[in-house]
Amino acid sequence: MTDPDRLWDSPEPESSYDVVIVGGGGHGIATAYYLAKNHGITNVAVLEKGWLAGGNMARNTTIIRSNYLWDESAGIYEHALKLWEGLEEDLGYDVLFSQRGVLNLAHSLQDVRDSVRRVNANRLNGVDAEWLDPAQVKEVCPIVDIRQDSRYPVLGATYQPRAGIAKHDYVAWGYARAASAMGVHFIEHCEVTGIEVVDGRVRAVHTTRGRIAAGRVALSAAGHSSVVAGMAGLRLPVQSHPLQALVSELLEPVHPTVVMSNAVHVYVSQAHKGELVMGAGIDTYNSYRQRGAFHIIEQQMAAALELFPIFARAHVLRTWGGVVDVTPDASPIVGLTPVGGMYVNCGWGTGGFKATPGVGWCYAHTIAHDEPHPLNAPFTLERFTTGALVDEHGAAAVAH
Image (cartoon, rainbow, N blue to C red; front, top):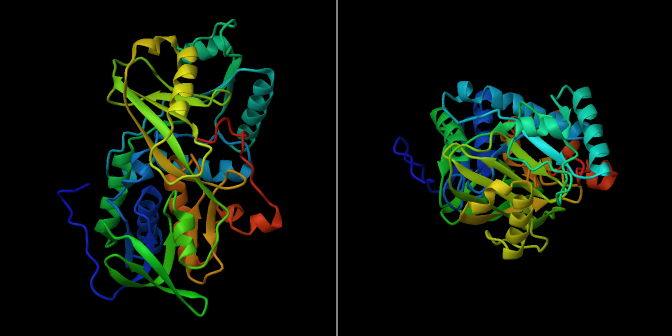
């Protein structure tokens, strides 16, 4: 990935930075931007083993929403959504943010009960949310099959009008260009091979391009967080799984919103160019492969065609997979670690993209002040010993 307006830096021998961020994806880039903008910390290096934003940031389905059940989740995702709403003006860069709304379908009585509960919880947290009956669902998205004799009858749906999509690579470049203009360094093709810890405190990172001294090290390597943390002797309660998605050929505009279904675990939107963007559930097998299994895509397509018969003649253009970190409670880990000067941001599962501005903001605060921001304070490592879990498994109508 080459930006004609910018030649990415190479580390000088024995170079030194106040903060080294491991991972040049959306979260790492956004964190660097907010470190510079909000805290005046510009002696920052973002290290990326591949090319900038070429990992999960390039493999997601671009869905943005904040209608999560639990207060802790709603807090950080709603903060992110508010930042999304002003992001283009803030960065001076078009990210194609489109607030077209998101529907979370209910197919059973238990789905209905859970969905209405979540709508009420959202409203109490100041998050826009509505409950729609089948006819209203059809008004928002005419191509959804709402016949009650269908395989997955639609009994209603939650609706968040402010939700939507954005173009993932534009988001990455907008943040990177703005951060670079403030002095942040981005170092591509620079894989971290070791983390130097002396007397319980991080001192440097060792890379394929040399040793880089660091006052603080912030981990933000989606899908590989446990590997990098292990270099400092830290074990994280995460597992890595492949996550698949696909796009269709280009079509005329047919799908005006985002539709998600927890029961069949399929979600679909239409990108700005016209392709249908569909996602499935994670592969249950642990793996670092950036590809998935055919049977998951097959099940996903079968469910999608039941909900959207109009898609029967569409052709799959390509499929791909990313690698996501999953925690025991399906919520992220953002905060300090037992290693002095080292911080961790991981475990977002399938919710990472939508959180990008919010976690970048909060993670930068955590690094700058050596203490969590109030919005990410519930997501520290300590919750796995205290039992104060934020269990979003099935609570937020698909954890995406």
